[in-house]
Amino acid sequence: MDGVSCYGKHNSSILEDEDLADEIHLHLQGLGKYIKAQDIINYLAQPSVQAQLQTKKTISLCMAQNWMHRMQYQWKKEPKGMYSDGHKHDDVVDYRQMKFLLQWVLLDQWCQWWDKNGEEIPCSFIAAPDGKIVIIWRHDESIFYANDRCLTCWVHAKETAKLYTKGEGVSMMAADFVSPDYGWLRAKDFDVTDLLTQGRTIRHKRDHLGT
Image (tube, helix red, strand yellow):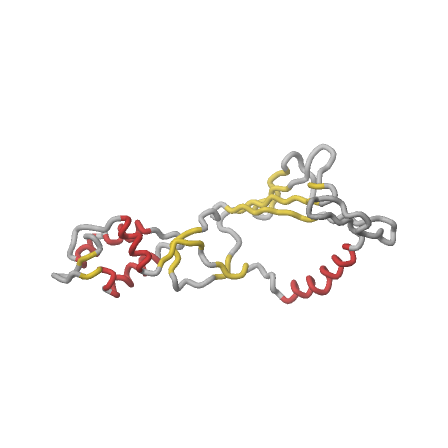
């Protein structure tokens, strides 16, 4: 079967049968997020489907990929909506606008500034009322997920962006502190990088320092 069948003596594309096309589409939807062209081949190889199509042959992988496009699937990254972790909750917005940013502006005038080449900008700050300058330590983190590697899949043209959950499966976070003045935060004999998973600390890179 080369993508042309069909019922009796008709010589038309199988996909022109809307009922069969809908059946294939529903079958693909039932397989979850990561579908593939081979799934169409497997579906058409079922005895019940072959009996319906009056054939004992299936289609090639190339033909199955062509069918994916004809059924309005595209090989691309899945569309993503806003992260579903509360960035726009009223209390978060209020804290950011009315407290955090105002405090940051205040501290900013007491910090050393650097140019794009990493060189200090002379006289770019003033000392705080207590005579000290402010050193900003920024929290840096990277989160890794067990099942968050495959970003490209067959996406139907009518599929819309969904709320995107950060990651899938078991996660691990590497957390650290960094400053433009001093680099990564380090103790005398060891660094303070944290490796955390599912709410508990696994271990530090070299030794344990309480957080």
